[in-house]
Amino acid sequence: MKIIIVGDLHGDFQALNNLVESECPDIIFQVGDFGFLPGKYGWPPDDPPLRNGETRIYWCDGNHEDHQALSQFIESNNYEVAPNCFYQPRGAVLTLPDSRNVLFFGGAASGDTGDGMEGQDRYHSEVPQLADLDNIPSDRSIDIVVSHTAPMAFKIRQDPPLGYAKLPWLAKHHEETRVLLDEILHRHHPQQWYFGHFHIHQTGYNEGCRWTALAMPFDGGETWWTELGDG
Image (cartoon, rainbow, N blue to C red; front, side, top):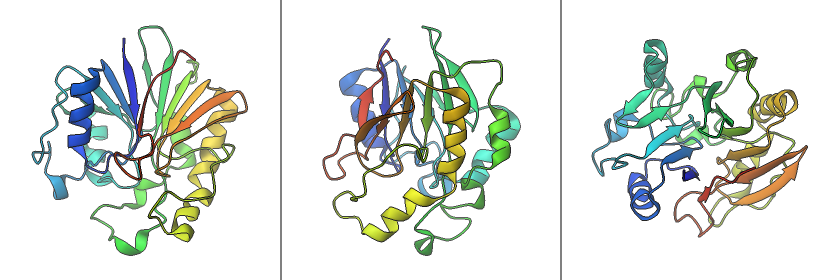
């Protein structure tokens, strides 16, 4: 089974379509800022449409989603937001055919709120709360985590990607969600962790966990997708 993890998309569904066509993955995990903005793109998106075919997409929320609209899927307990495209709320666990458990835990604070308005592409519910940790099943081990931002324990580089102002980008390093993700790292001891948010590609190893940060498609030429390893 071929599983690919992709970085922030921000609605670049053509890049996702191209990846599906060229790599033919069975499953895609996406790390948030998927581009779920019905008021902006319509939903399902049609310019371009999402053409994932038989590829199943599982994604967590980022800080740039319509969380108000996502809450309706949570309330209905139906997470298939488009054919073979599944939103994974915070604390959702997916078991792979090889029995590994994948935890999804999206959300982060926006460090660039000055250029957006509440009710458009940023919402107060973008920031995870301590109570969200209670959604994680206590009777299942966690092997892999897919999140939007990263635990504070992961030492993210301090130089921003090409074209990004340094101070707003560095603000991402110090927001409260990272401390919350430290709790997941310390409680569940995953072997692998994938995230986006910083729009960079970087790998590391901290506290027994091998982690990968993924960039955006065609954003400065940094790697924006990777194939899931064996652990």
